[in-house]
Amino acid sequence: MRRLLKFLKPQLFWLLLSSALMVLEISMDLMQPKLMSQIVDEGVTLSNQDAIRHYGVRMLIFAIIGLFAGFASSVCSSRAALSFGNDMRRSLFRHIQRLSFAETDKFTTGSLVTRLTRDITILQHGLIMITRMLFRTPIVLLGSIYLVMVTNPGISIPLLAAAPVLSAIVVWRIKITRPLYKQIQTRLDDVNIVMQENLTGIRVVKAFASEPHERERFDEANERLTETSVKTGKIMVALGPWLSFVQYLTVIAIVFISARDINRGLIKIGEVSAIINYATQVMMSLITLSTQIMHLTRAMVSSQRINEVFDTAPSITSGPIDEPPPDGSIEFRNVSFKYPAAAGDPVLRNIALSIRSGEHIAIMGSTGAGKTSLVNLLPRFYDPTEGEVFVGGMDVRKYSLDALRNSIGIVMQETRLFFGNIAENIRWGNENATDEEVEHAARIAGATKFIDQFPHGYETKIAQGGVTLSGGQKQRLSIARAILKKPKILILDDSTSAVDVITEAKIQSALRGEMEGMTVIKIAQRVSSVMDADRIVLIEDGIITGIGPHEELKRTSAAYRDICDSQDSLRGLNENES
Picture: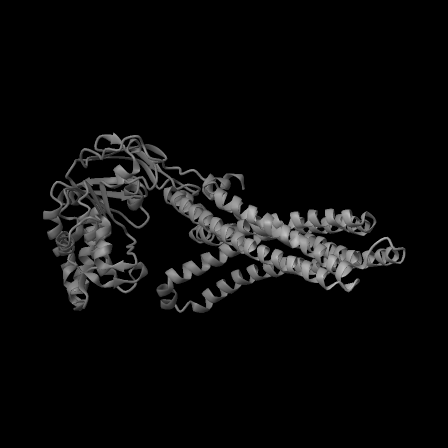
C-alpha cells in the first residue's frame, strides 16, 4: 500500500489532528475504571458522599471531554478518508483514460468499474478504521495492560497468558481469509461484467428472447460470489465464540485470584472492579483488533487490485510534437498489424498506401478483411506490429496524442452517444461551437428534419447510449459531431449503413461541399456509397488487392466486378418484387 500513501500527503494535517484527538479520547476512557474504583473504595465502602460526588463529577467531565474528542476525531478521519478516496478515484480514472484499447481489454470494463468504485470505497473505509479503531485499539490494549500491572502485577498473569492465545487465533484467521477476500473481488468483477453486458445489450437480449439464458449467467456468477462470501463469513463468525470463550476464562481466572487477595487484604474491592474492567478492555481490544486486521487485509487486497491498474503503463504514449499535422496526407509504409494476444495470422499484412491531402478514399472489402483495423492505426488506437504510419509527412508516433487526434474526425462503426441533449452531443466535436455552427453541422448530416420534429429540438434529452434514437438518427448525429470538429482527416466507418439510399445520397452530396480540402476515408459496403471517391481501395484478408477509381476497378479487378454485379442483381430483384 506504500504507493497509495502519496494520496494521503494532502490529508496529513487532518490525520494528525484526528490522532491527537484520539489520544485525548482514549486517555479519558482509560481514567473511568480507575475513578470508579475510587468511588467504590473511598466513597461507597466508607459511606463518604463527598468522595462519591467528587469522583463522580470527574468521571462526568472526563466523559464529556472524551465524547467531544471522539466526535471531532471521527470528523477529521472521515474528511481525510473521503478526500483520499476522491483524489485516488480521480487519478485512477485519468490513468485508465490514458490506457490503450489493449490494456482496457485485458482488464475488462466490469473489472475496471469495480476497482474505481468498490475497491476504492473499501480503501476509504480501511483508512477510517486505521485512523480510528486500529490506532485506538493498540493504545487501549497497552494502556489497560499497564494499568492492570501497576494496580496488581499478580493479577495480570491470566491476562498475559491469554494474549498469545488470542494473537495466534487472529494470525490464523488472517492467513485463511486473505485469499478469500481476493476471490470475492474477482467474483464481483464477474457479476459486474455479466450485468454490464446484459444492460448495454438489453435490446439484443429481448430481440432473441434470451432473458432466461442471461438470468442463468447472472445467477451462476452471483452464486459463485455468494458462496465465497458465505465461506469467508463462516470463518469470521465461527472464531468469534472461541475468542469470547478465552475472554471469559481470563476474567474468571482474575476473579478467583482477586478473591484470594481480597481475603488476605492485599487488594481492595474497587481495585478488583477496575482490574476486571481493564482486563475486559484488553480482551475486547484483541478481539476488535483481529476484526480490524481482517478489514485491513481486505483493504490490502483492494490496494493490490488498484495498483495493478496503476502499474499498467500505456502501450501507446504521446510523442514530443504538440503541433498538429500540417496537412491531411497519409502514408502506410509496409504496415502489418495483429491484435495483442490474438492467435492466427495478422489482420493486416504489408499494407503500402499513399493518400494525398484532400483526397477522398473509399475502402471496401468483406467483413473481417481489416478495413476498420487499418483506419484505427491513424489516431493510434493501436500501433502497427510492423511498418510505419505517416500523417502530414511525419510518423504518427512523433505527434502528441492530443495533437494527432484533434486533427482527425471519426464516425465509428459502432455509434456511441452520451447522456445529455442533442446539442451537447454534437458539441463533442467542438465544445466552443456556436448554436449556428451546431445547426449547420446537423443540416449537413441530414439531421435537422428529425431534430425539428422533437418538441424541444436541440435541447431534447438523449438517454445513455442514444437508445431513444433510431440507428440512422444516431449515425447522422455522429456525422454532425465529426463535421463540427473541422478535422484535416475525416474517417467515415460505414457511417450511413442505417439510412436509406436516398437519404445517404443527400448526405453525401452535402458532405462533398463541406469536406473540400479535407482528406476523407470512407468505409462502406454499398458500391453506390463509394462511386464518387477519387480512389477505391479493395482489401481482402488484410491485403490490398485493388486500388483505383470506380470505372478503372471495374475493368481491372474481378473481385470488385463481382461486388458490383451482386449488388446490381440484388437491386434488380428488389425492384421486381416492388
